[in-house]
Amino acid sequence: MIYKKNITIEECENAVDEICQLCHKNHISKYGKEALGCAFQSFDNTYCDKVLIFKSLIKEHFDNPPLKLDEIELGMWVWDKKYNAYRLIADFEFEFESGRFYKRQVEE
Image (tube, rainbow, N blue to C red; front, side, top):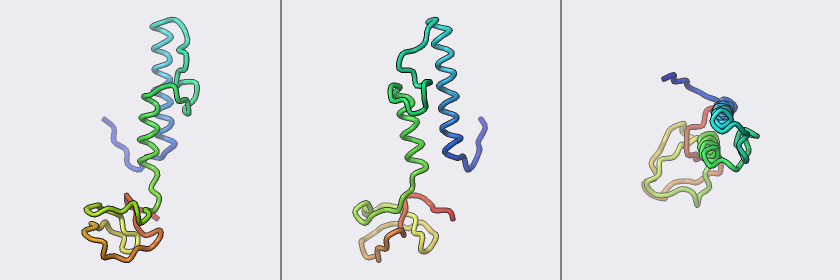
């Protein structure tokens, strides 16, 4: 298995596209015709539930907007941009600043 760090969103979308192309070729060789509603038609195709799962995972991985106060829960680990470290929210005795807390590390 090849492991690569710092994969981009474009590389992930291209990998899904390659999988779709293989699936498309397999369908044609197996059934002798084009698949209707095949995800191969475009990466944004919503007919294939497998592609939707991958798209959701890609979006979840790359989207890391700052957390809003109502999204922060007790027992949650968050990235504190102010101190460049993860912190456990053990109580609500902290100063909330917009753009300070994230789900994952923010690299600048």
